[in-house]
Length: 318
Image (cartoon, rainbow, N blue to C red; front, top):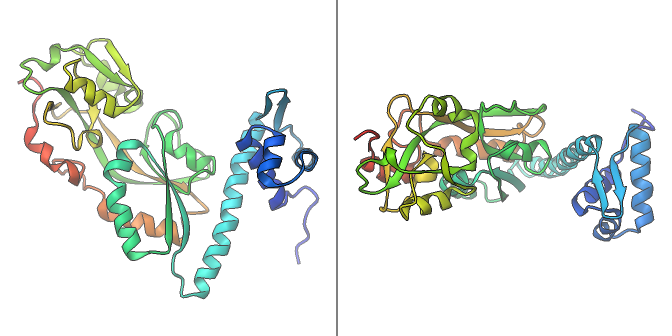
């Protein structure tokens, strides 16, 4: 029988690290865990001694993870989640291996709106024991994949192949290429002449090279963080925008959608999960339903819900 090493962290120590990071301080973590502050302090000091690094900066404002602490907390979340999965899947195997229990899903906004409803409908019909928990994440910086890396999600619908590499310990699978289009007030004769309404998520590497080659796109006159806000501004005649197709499904009739032509930029949409969780029954079930409902590459529209907009497309220079 293997012996526990003195440097090994116990599950309760991992829970304390996560609680301090989430609560922002030792006192709040103690309250959340139902223990004394001294017990939390003792546990953190013990973890720091075992790891050989300071995990939290202490101050009057509370406690914030150091860079070492960020790494430790992310691993702690993932390990604790694996312990939960171990219990759930072992029980499931004893009951004919039916997937069950919570499944934490992260997705950027338009993917959550346009892809998740069909996926979760199929998942519930085939695997009623799975309990989806959905987090909406802006697809900037580390985006949805970062939620998986930090142990806050089991699987994410994410953009792939951007400027940031996939975090270590994660695996990814591609689903489809999502094209971008020009959106403008319906009926405008010269949409290229309009001011630009820019969207924060457009700054990624997916459009950067294409954007740099376009001499007709002006500097943004308005910048927005939400794709729905961009469409509302365009609808109100405030300008034009370059948007990915998932954001355009359900666009109002007051928004015209123009094809950017064969050189249009695209971004790859896929899923990201932890290497340890990729073989779990719940994640495998979700991936099956996601692949079954994802649009196929080469289709006129990347979303079934957006098929109606295909007839509204026209060349960008017409």
